[in-house]
Image (cartoon, one colour):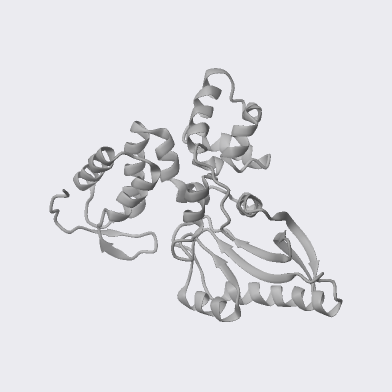
Length: 289
């Protein structure tokens, strides 16, 4: 049973000051696969180290270090949000990663496709097709936490989608497919942006939207973790793999020889592959869309 602790206010990445409540950390630690005993010891240690106006990113960093000492695979799952932020800096690895999530759900995808609109030609981040469903997907990657997609982004995405759909309809080249637009981001969408997208029928996927079916939920349930989750890789090694188009841990599970491109061999390769195997042990084919 959790003991009563004095209220301490901490600072979120957007500057908001809120009471320190370990419940979110507890939930994240639980999802990572950490044992109840380990979770409780981490929470108690956080109470010892937290101070007024402490940035929440520092709190999560401390929790991550404590978890990493006990379980690297759990630590990899725990730092999922930061791992998604590391799918940059260009944002193209993020697009590749999202395309993989759609492929896992049974879609055929292409990235950076030029599509003609009624007015102009557009470069589409991801074009996904499955049976009679065709998705025109815009990815908005942000490298900094606390950055949100405001209403201007869905306005822009919807106008591009409508221009392409208009062209398809007027030239009768839609092949009877149902076209839908998507906005996918690694952060959050503002309330007015969400309201507009709902009103216009624009599909959205953000870190925690739709509730219970956001990006973090899809990844945790499918087990399709990005290579940036791997705590056994350096930042340089991760970026080397991303530059080669390797975005999924599952890809390394299927082709461990790819690690040699990042000069990972011998005993160290075994260490990395052990973490890869643990992260990939619960991969599921998830019909999330």
